[in-house]
Image 1 (tube, rainbow, N blue to C red):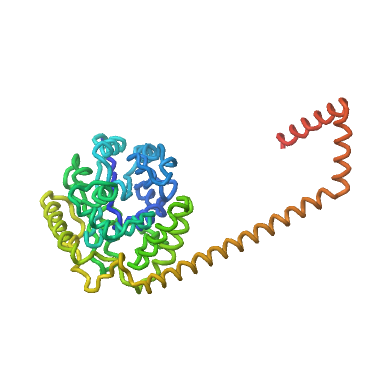
Image 2 (image 1 turned 180 degrees about the vertical axis):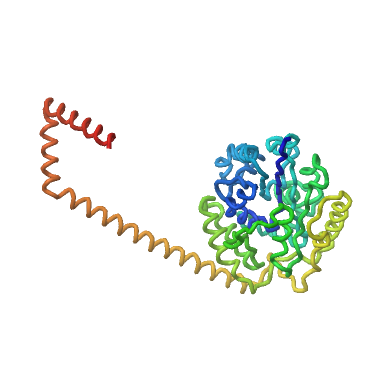
Length: 406
């Protein structure tokens, strides 16, 4: 009797707890394997590189590292004796041809049963979150311009193409789930803001069949959000520095040090939100998507009502016309972080230079020893004549054989 392997293929969407999910899965690989589940990854971003490779997607030079990553991942899945989980949110934008290749290489239709998992959140939260992610990836486009582009029905250009590729839930489900029975398509809804932080994780546990596995959940990898003023500051930095700051330096300095480690801690400033005048348009799409998902008969884990966003915020903070006092406060915190990081690097440089100086002194002391100078003179004399060179050659060969036998 042929054993059917079950592969849970989680394809997004962004900003739905995916970073935390992937962190937990990666750091619990040995435990998962003992329970018959493989999360094939030799580095935390292995599935990201595999997604880049599958879709031939440029990503600031990382695509060079990604060559062959999808085939390696798919091979690891096919060779495993148990079930498997694959997860990355950029897979949401894959084309039908790329999806077909993904399913084929994973063994769909042979000894493998594919289960599609899509985590989804209301558009009222997703739209500002997507603009902020653009900003944290060097974009300098204003919030107003971003909103205009994604609302344009023509959907032309990089920004709307990417946004709707990873956010239009019915279309993603249609592309990825076209060849799957509805009961093998699982929609995980993100609970409304203010609810229990454990609820989304419980829904993921149900979707991936992780019940009864005592997973280690601490040490969370987060992709934290910024307030309106803080996002404005990062956008201004992008406008000022993009032409001179190489991509290799942007991520550790701007995205990680400034955005994630520093500005995300300013939680008392107004949050980024959907403008009240855009709210009816987004709400209309949410209602249409809920109706479509319900009609298709997918397995919904959570509540489709979660895909209805909250009402418009009473005090909307426009990041295109921010409170300059709040932006200045964020700038001071950012400058402080840069200064402290620079001081840390300077201290590290001083420490390493001291270590190098110590090594140099030790070497010089060794060279000044009488025995060293005597051996040096002897070698020079021997190598001055043919007989001496033969003796040195024989000696070195003997030393080489002695070292190998040892």
